[in-house]
Image (tube, rainbow over all chains, first blue to last red):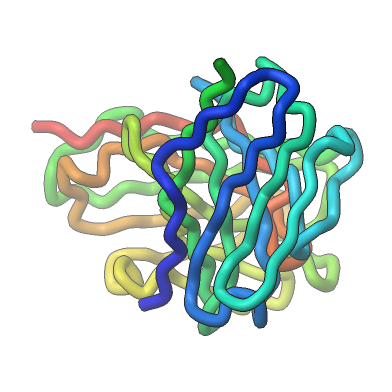
Length: 106
Length: 118
């Protein structure tokens, strides 16, 4: 079965750039999306179709996807961005989630 | 405004069948391209996709759980129902229903915690 691999944790200082990766076989040939989940809340879509931002998502969130890796980038990271982040893609007509990355802003 | 809400038992016994209902508003499941799916999250763990049903009744299931899952829709009631058989304590999780109009989920319900215990 298809797997998406994320680092368990990423740390960033406020105002700096955070990058969270998601790796999967030929992931660049698929659409990747990203969800943010704060403690006790439902996930929120922050990036879809590799690099598109839904309405209401700040411009500091951006995405890319090439080769075997999709990347979520948060520029000028704020304390409110501290959350778990999950990548997701489709493979063989089924949905696959990554294992999630805890972003700590300190 | 699209909203979804999950309902069902909060506690089930091992071996029982779980039935969850997703009641939604703000869209129609008869609209081309629209789907409603289920995702779960065990306490402290990652999201796991379960199933998805489309406007044309096309159904997709997680390969690892396919034998235990059934997803159906009632377009007139704006509801989607998920059944999971042979529940086990490892199935304890928050179960989310969600709206999809592409290769992603754009709206999520608040989730419902289901505990499996005797």
